[in-house]
Image 1: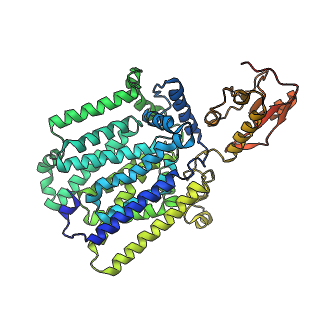
Image 2 (image 1 turned 30 degrees about the horizontal axis):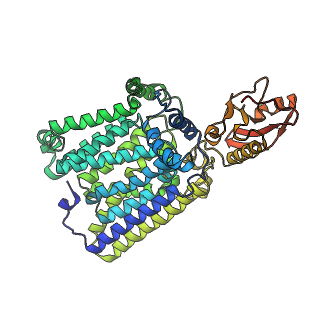
Image 3 (image 1 turned 90 degrees about the vertical axis):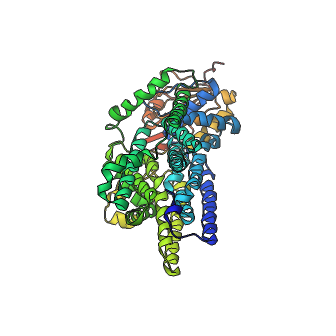
Length: 533
């Protein structure tokens, strides 16, 4: 089932060097794009909520899995270590998502025999430079760890099918367990991967032996790659143990294990058709607009795979297409779910690039292929830089390939602001508000203990940015009497505050996110009520 056993073409040392060099560049570029200026983008609403759970775990030692609104526990326990080592910083908060983004590139090394050296380099660079994979590696959310665990499960399981050694199976089992302990959508991923394996096996057998061989030989072929009883039992123990550890909060919340099963029903019935509903073509629109090199390369890869793909290639194609269709059929859609598609896409393209490089006998078509790949790398780099370092809070999602042409033709991805990775993102103006609070608090006698009332109903991710202040109260409304010397209100509360008098606006209206504008008030001298110590 390896590439080398199915190929009659041997790579030269120069090809191995080029592939390894490209892969090294991919790791370097991927690390830089994911870690550089990691705090430049204000925390998203969801990041703020996740940070609240993390801070409660770090400061109070408390975390209990809630199946109704939130995802699995791995994010918080991984981040806890970074927080203890790096302190309460943006880098510590986003360290593991960024690290998993880099590790996802690194994990391709496990599959170099299946992809070939040139395929390894191409896949590594495409994954490193994908604007979406970079964007969600810079968010404190579950997606990039989920992507890495998916790839780790695939690589470990495929290597076990070849070697029958327990070590790769143990890795696959651990990754599968962490996958389920990260997000409830793991069940979708595993179902798609299982169907992709069945499809790849059937197609490969039919092509090599004819359709007449399928009924009698398919089950035997499938059983040959499955673990034996002892290995299966050991892998099951690993899987169950890891899930129990995380969902029980390291044995402090046994009910969390039951809640893990309840969560599946919640996310498939109660939430799937109510929130964040988009049409079938939503993900394809984002791919066309922002990931055009991957989308075009994926279509080319599909043709190559159907033409001469090995069983591994067929599996890649089925995985990529299957996961894209699965999430497109579900009404509930958010941009970060695209990570599920963006992980296999570069691998399939890299595999196809390597197949084409092997198929071409002369230098001219190989140079043309290299030029095409280089073009894809360059434009992906430019788009990734623009999306992640310049327009990271552009909620109008104006960045994209063929932007002016798409707007002139009134194509939906270019006229509907929902088509993009920026999704109700906190505006950079919010950081001006945070700085104003810090400056005004520094003028108060109580310093970090200064009372701050957050009267605005919308305020996330403010708790993270005000984490060192001990006198902050989050009411979400305007109480009858305000004792704090500082108050954050929203635009709808301004008239009432001005009617009461005694407050000075320290800032103008600053955007929190679309539709939400906040400002800071300071109690005028002579009006301050003594703070409770």
